[in-house]
Amino acid sequence: MRTALLTLVRLGPSLAYATASVFLISMLLLEYSPSSASAWWLYMTILPIMREPIYLLFAVPGVGIWIAFALLILASLFGIQLALQPQRYLRSGFIHAHVALIATGLTMGRAAVAHAGISSFSLPQLLRGDWSFLPLSYSPLGTLLFVLVLSACICCHLRILGRTYRSREGQAD
Image 1 (cartoon, one colour):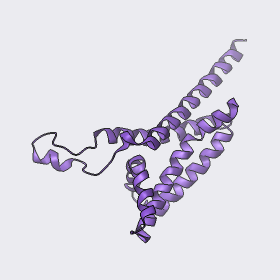
Image 2 (image 1 turned 180 degrees about the horizontal axis):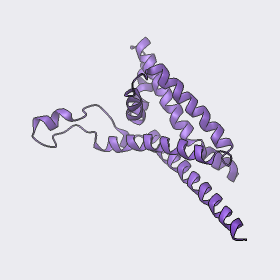
Image 3 (image 1 turned 120 degrees about the vertical axis):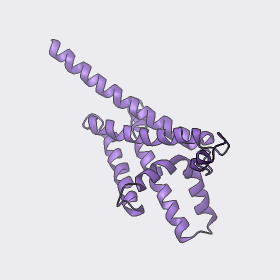
């Protein structure tokens, strides 16, 4: 039971990458069928969770929607392998989980400051604001994803610390 639960927790980063892939699929669905209510629902459901990481990925020169989709699918599949064999890939699992944590944490941080309102009366500061609808603080899916990825990172730290402790214990004997 413990092993199954820890495996599910370690799958958190893969779920984050898969959610980002679904967000890209929703963008493609909107491109091909802009009047589809289900495409809009999917897009608006995932928008608060994956907007910042995806747009950050698009900012990399040469990365379009298809390359981003392929990278995210590969990262998600790689994460499944890492979750199933955690002792074999300690460092890779650590990096994989922490990149997902940074992406979901970036979204959580951006959502906390993304609101429409007058924070100052200077016009340049008003023009720099982000005026889009971004209700992440009320998104249970985003919160669940963040907690799951954070738990996976904690698991990585505990595995690395346990391995270090066991190796030092073996050297002392």
